Image 1 (cartoon, rainbow, N blue to C red):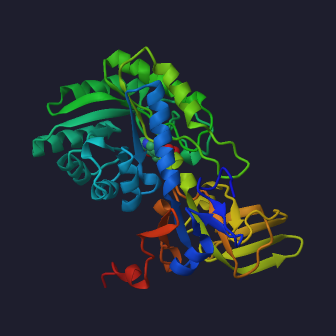
Image 2 (tube, helix red, strand yellow; image 1 turned 90 degrees about the vertical axis):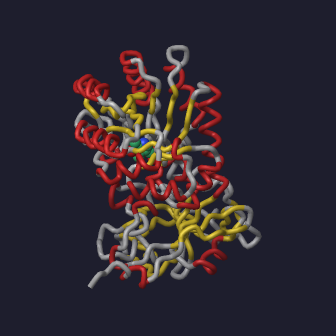
Image 3 (cartoon, rainbow, N blue to C red; image 1 turned 60 degrees about the vertical axis):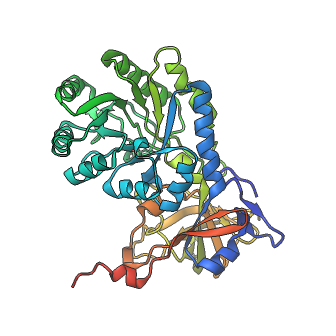
Length: 421
Ligand SMILES: *Cc1c(COP(=O)(O)O)cnc(C)c1O
């Protein structure tokens, strides 16, 4: 069972069941319950290695850091850290988790467009390698915190490059009208401010143009712009952010990291010695994850639509609701059967819009059967909620026939544990 939207270890066993990491998904449902997030260790490791290898082959002075917000779980960050990657953290909570996963603080890039003074102090005390300054207000807070603690901060300035990438509006971040980054016409003023500060030093520039991007041209334009700023200000680091897309559907084209690396580094090669930083999130963990659901009610509205209602939905995967994101599902039993039905996979939550897949093609699936939704490793668990007071699912990491619990399933007791009255 090979498909570009499934983990690299996906297969089918002698019972004709879908397997990931050598584990039968029906067995995982029995052992851990559903819904269940399943993460394939091999896919995560392969993606980390591919990034590092492809970029360093073209441009040796490259550092790859994982954007934690895509999936911030101690066990997953440990796997990624063991591949030598650093982390992009964008909140105190992500910083805390990365440190708990024993990340090297020097390889942490602290992002965010409104870090609180407390978060800034936590970052300084932890010794994070880089603060990414988003605006002048934040720079003032950073300056105050460095003087208060007597600690130095090395910063990248996030610029808003005014580049439009072809992706969903909500995940587009680099166009002129954006809440992120310093507009180019205000950059000189901000850099001048940074240079005045005693304990803050400017290392370079950062931009992040959006997410789920398949087209390399906007990245090349971004690299060119940051190269020009690097030359203009004599800085030493170019941080291109993340944003590379992944195939959500089996018919999607896999954007080859190798080609991405070639095109981006071609802009820089021979023109600068600056360190290149990449911050992939989705393209490290997205394809490694599948979500396992049990199908409950099947509602067929003749001539209108057939609904399969699953035991999860928008609280474990809000991406259809947020962006109309597309997914594909595989039945656990006979995942390779012909996809001759058009069905809508709906969740159990009290919103009509709570869908996972609208009008997708699937083999016939009956009530009580299991389905696996592909490519849910990024921005699913990390965006999960407790809507309708539904406990968040467990997560297992699978590898070589073994499944290890990475996140426990929440209990009702967990749900009320912060209710103070
Ligand atoms: C979200 C984000 C990333 C990761 O984006 P992906 O699309 O998941 O690769 C990297 N850097 C910054 C600053 C981000 O905000």
